[in-house]
Image 1 (cartoon, one colour):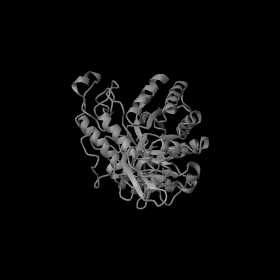
Image 2 (cartoon, rainbow, N blue to C red):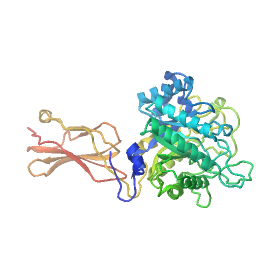
Image 3 (cartoon, rainbow, N blue to C red):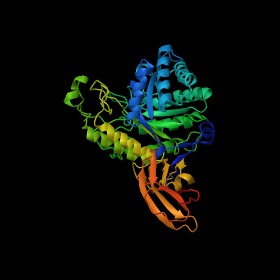
Image 4 (cartoon, rainbow, N blue to C red):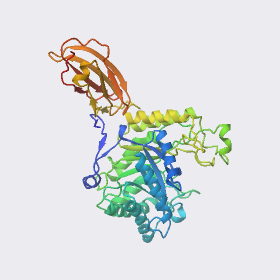
Length: 488
């Protein structure tokens, strides 16, 4: 599949050294990873894991993010953790679902701040890549701009402390992973969408705006001549589940999904002109969740109380919000993927009921609409983007053979690489004059049968001509023609 890009950059490349290691990075449009951040797939045995992966597939997902917690003293996963990861690997290989692994310390009491702890953490992450080569995407830490996962956030003088400390961890982990597998992708950031930037506050948090700025400054001051990441992960949650994904924050330091320009600008300022890519850095939205109201018939599955600030919505609104978020991300050139948080609800109402399945694994009414939104994203039809032109092809076209054509077979079989509008014509082989045609619409990957059965094609030899074009973001027409076919 080739994506044409006359006005906006859809195909991206990292800095020259990075490109040599991992190849070009294409992002935005139908190439995005689509899935969920979902530890339910971390089951005790392969059968349970496969069942959870099957649910991801039924929801139209092609990617999943799992976690693996590092604890002080560990330089590699325990045998039990490795067994769980191998279960995930087995199910992923069977289903073709891409796995992202988020490696982080489970809380601020275990933040890897010392040289010894950083080396242990880096060794742990690299050991996962070494033990499971199919795990090509490692996310380093989780929301290091929040006190929940990283302390201290500030120095005694009020300046940012978390970003320089995180830089030291990210740099060492990047080098350790690349030493094991230069083609593995290291994702930095994993930042929360908001923070207070108040050193004197009761809860010490840094906004992603302040964090990225401080991270860039620390990187430049370090004198490092190698990159620290292959992509940037971010959690672009809305302020609450009732807020539209279209809502922007031009006058605050928050970065939600519609604040892409702010995020891209911050990365540009932080890193362009260094060994680390900035303006072309792929962005992964590895957590995005909209909570839905739990119906009375499912209430017994859940415990606790929903916080008043969550503002959950009905399932129709949840599906609409996920669709709108996909439309927005689809047109953001550097975005490499979007993962919902989660696919399956958590039982505790104080946690997340943002899945398309209830806590008992039964589907919500939002599942069908979300599946369709994922499918339209993969097919390139979820949104019309300024300047985006998608080239559609049919990798295999089966025209009727001469003997079959003489017997009256007038069908052509094919499938489109993306969503397509197709047209099948018959033209006289001698002069190209058309004798019949039929048109239709096809979804990406679906088997399509175009038929001129019953149409008058004339008595002279004809060619069958198949033409494809994208229905929403059209590039040039793609055409294939049969050899001349005699009608009798």
